[in-house]
Image (cartoon, rainbow, N blue to C red):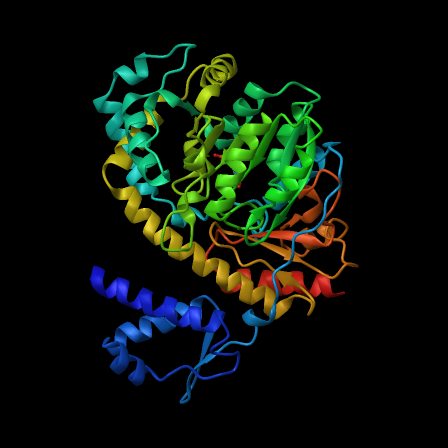
Length: 472
Ligand SMILES: Cc1ncc(COP(=O)(O)O)c(C=O)c1O
């Protein structure tokens, strides 16, 4: 079974590679099922499975009696390119607008293309439910304990150390602080290394919650151009940190939000070295690291950190359930400051949930969940790309994410996605307007779409309605 699975995936990947490189062009016919079966020595059903996967991803279409053809739609859209950003750091003011967008986007009856949340059907809820019951019975001490000092459960720390082998590690258990979510990990890390008024380098476009954190902590944002394929520009960061003092660099190097880019290892190495030399602390958010679409898990910048200067933050919100609210930071030499911030913020992190997570990870179920989830997210992202290509105005550009489950869409200059937002909600579709990803009000002609839900006819119809609105 495992073999069959791998074989059809390999065939699907080979064919999508041939399409991506242009060897098979839109409208051209793929080799027949019988020929693929013969030449690849695969059963007909395995070949069909591969073709169905490509169909789901919007790359090919079946034509009755004729075979499979490369679709026109998905291939004709170019990805957006990195934009130049302001030279100076600016104060941030996105929170109120963001709150309104996220709240209106959650209303019943509105297609959930706004907040980056996975569908409940993709979460291993039954397994987590069983574990919660069992853990509460088997570990009564967890309900008894509780204190204002950090309680990091040894069983979870052990699992994180084991997982860190796959991040270019291993990291030491003593480096971790367990947190309530990735958001808390990012906040504690920022507070550990900055003072109000300091400047923090961020990606452009940046994940809006990072901008919100800067705003509430009284920090200024220095937006660094970020490429949809290779991530934050090291050259621009080099220039930006030559003179002015930059306290920290806050970024998502693996499958970033919103661009889905993965920074090449060489750039990660250069970034780790440059920031260490310039005295810039790095706060790395690796929440999408396990959700890459390629063969190997990309290493975080932390893997290239020789100066203990990188704080690696993450959580299980995108892979298991956002409701767990368990995250962590491996804080390098900043660990004592981060631990202090944790103590004065929330004391510890729920010990029952820590134990549940530890047992889930220990059981091996996480690896299986991830294998399925990566494929599912990739399929959903591809289906959304194809839908955007079908329904949005002709000059629209779409990212090709290398992981995660959001799409960044750039519309013609004259489209204002903030001005159109209320009309979209009235038409029953949510999204996040592009300007919320910038401290300086860039990206008004862009928007982000959540692909965390199965691409049902309802979602397709929502994309069609949104496309109609944007084209007007
Ligand atoms: C890059 C990034 N970091 C952090 C978070 C939030 O994670 P958590 O729910 O663990 O706070 C998100 C959620 O959208 C995200 O996209």
